[in-house]
Image (cartoon, rainbow, N blue to C red; front, side, top):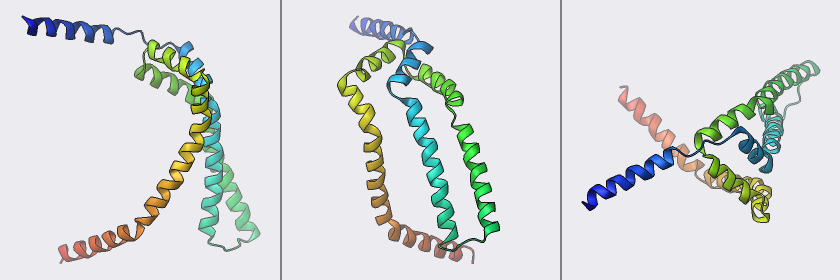
Length: 167
């Protein structure tokens, strides 16, 4: 009998969870505002611009391009940045955010996040998380670069094995 009651309670709980109110566009937009999501997107756009400049410098390998080459590089860079700026435009990303948040969270969960992010602790998370993530990425890059010699050795062993397998 307890088994049947447990199944009934489980089904009832699952039904109640499945019937949770979907998040509304209004509450999601409030959450996106409170968490400064648009500012983060703008930061991503700026990072892409910086990444393009760094990539160009690496490709040049310290060489100075001719004026015509400089113009071609500038044209390519400007076109690529414009494409990415367009792809990362808030007007294009906001509908995606709304859809993904609706698929992932209920209205109750969004309201709970809003409540938290409006507190001083929530604001601290919002303001400090980008710096924390940047520091984390730098640490991870250091860790990964330390593994580069091992990765190179594995690649060399792989090439040797492939050559032997092809004989």
